Length: 544
Image (cartoon, rainbow, N blue to C red; front, side):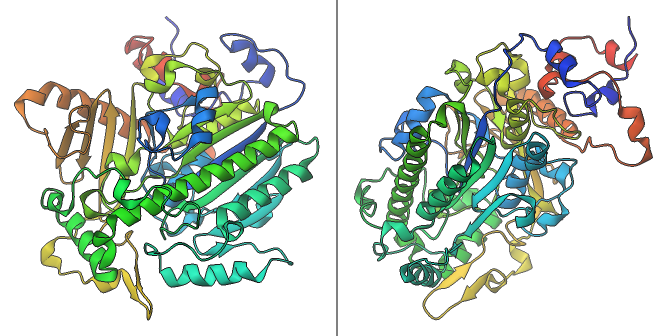
């Protein structure tokens, strides 16, 4: 038997940096015809967009008809997850293909600390792509890194020199909302809305690109708060008609002190939040339809310019939203499905509809290596995500590789408890018109917990040894904790083993320092998949 050092092999986290491109293609399971030109790439990232809210996903309201149509033409992964349910670390995972414990950013502060070899934009530059951002960034990226830069956040953004004065007036109105729910229709036209302006910028970028292949991030800051929407989207889904919620504030007694503290913070800063929960959902769903209509604008322009057929479109979100389940808006505590599960749709060039969407567990971290293979590029060192490109093309793939997925949250330390008497003032800012609050604060982000999803089950385990186990098929709202119940002992043991595997796997595998040379080996993991090593050989092959 040939002796191989598994640790050297697995630590590469790439498609063999030492393997020439021609040799790598020869290794592929089935050869592809040579492409005349590299495909364009557009990845659309919405913010705080909860999964499962479209008619195609079984939701009773038609919030996203164009996204549903793209799903029918391509693949919508029903089991897609954020690496962590907050903006900056999740977005950095998308750009680098690394989980937060590896890229080293676990909160929204200090994105410049991100650690990686190359991100997707650097790979694209090396492949001759024109690079662009239109919309929300909220990462370490800087304007000088890209060829085109039009940045926006939740309160506004780029303004053309001849921009109408209504845009500045609209942004001033947004600021007065203080990230809270609007109780009236937005008194400004659709054209002032940030998603409309972002799509206009995206169209400008595409029109400027000529025959050069491009990669463009279209970053919608919505449906993230403030929950506001103009006519005709206001009351497109009236409050009295929105579906109910899993549970109200009465469930907080079972969710622990930090969730209770977050609810208190929310109500202290904006007491109408719970009273207006149906308005919150109505505005949120209306904004989803607004986003979908802007997606329609973007797709129609691509059709008109005859670039759609040579473009890969990815639509995803950085994390979800409580959407007033348990009385909570936004995000902030724990790893519930409402925050960790995200929409992820792939459509366009080379992508074939497949039943894989209902079975494979995928991650935000899988986007980067997938786009590398779309461009015909090698996956950089240290990438932990797995390329989905063979799955998207309808090719064979190891089911075991995508049998589960992993996420985490927390910046460390111990949990804050009631005895700590933390005042709400640490996370709220009083204003004359209204008060704002930051749900991502030292109380809600204290501690450290990890989760694994596999089959119909979900396990959460934390640094204190506290466990949560849910059978989501019968308990989708995660209200019945089966951890420690004899009836679920076998599933608990199985998921604990799976969680341990993922925890080890997602440690930083990026070699640093003078020892780098010994990692340069001809062995590689095709598509960054571990399954051929984990399940295709005996343990002795790895440790001999």
